[in-house]
Image 1 (cartoon, rainbow over the protein chains, first blue to last red):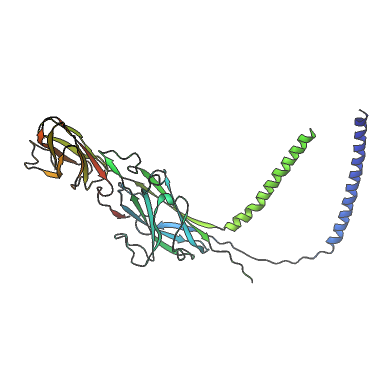
Image 2 (image 1 turned 90 degrees about the vertical axis):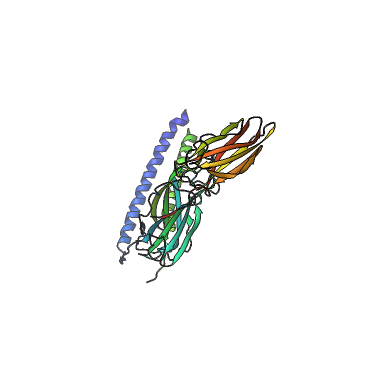
Length: 220
Length: 180
């Protein structure tokens, strides 16, 4: 009981000492700052900078571009669409590009649940615009993606032979994207197998991604 | 009580430290990744279906006679060929023989437009299961008319089952390459 009665007095004494110490220190610091301010000097310089942009756009090359495959796709069918990939930014891209394809909804056409069956994608670059009527390239063709199951494209896959593809600002790549359907199934008396790709629908979302050129250190 | 207060204080300090570390690291990570460009496109597709359905798949023969079955393309894709798995039962005694014919029009009086129709496969014996194939194209919703003929020596009922099968891609219409 007696301990408790003495503690507040001691605390008040310590508090007074602390306040006095703080005041003294503040006065000292202010005086020192005044001395330094009197001795300061300033040198100024200006440097302008503009950050670049990296824009990758997709537009129709010839035909309707990515759209809907009208009708019902049969095994072995190929649906070719022609798109332009254009670097419209002010920065060149690093060599290399990736493609990811996601199906909505995900089903046996896209998720690889039936081995060897489902949609496939092939991509080929042409040095000039494609000829829609024949699906041919009058220039030089460069395969950039061999026939690949969509189920293997859910995570981005590096495209091949890409260094020249939209690497420089303003450069356009003319790309044929071929969609195929692989299926080996037997229907018995009009009934599909229990696991089937028949009659399924999906929307494929293609994502082409490029990265900026490597950062540069300059001395001037 | 003191313990609780200290524990709260420690937690607060730790949380603040983690937040500060996160804020300090984020700009560094972003600058290391650089900027990327993305281009998006979407394409919709529907797969077709393929199959043929027989109106009658099981036939019982007590005597030498003919029975028919209509086969319809019940899928959404045209067919270039159709197979039939034909099973002939084994009677206790007798030597039945089975042949299958097809006709583009319904059979009338066991005749196909006045003719015999086109035989599919060979002559099938009792106690056998055989797959026979027709190469007649069949449009979506189109029909073919089968006639199963029982010949040979029959003393007891012989059962013939006939089950259409369609296998892709061989028996589905020729693949098409389209440019759009």
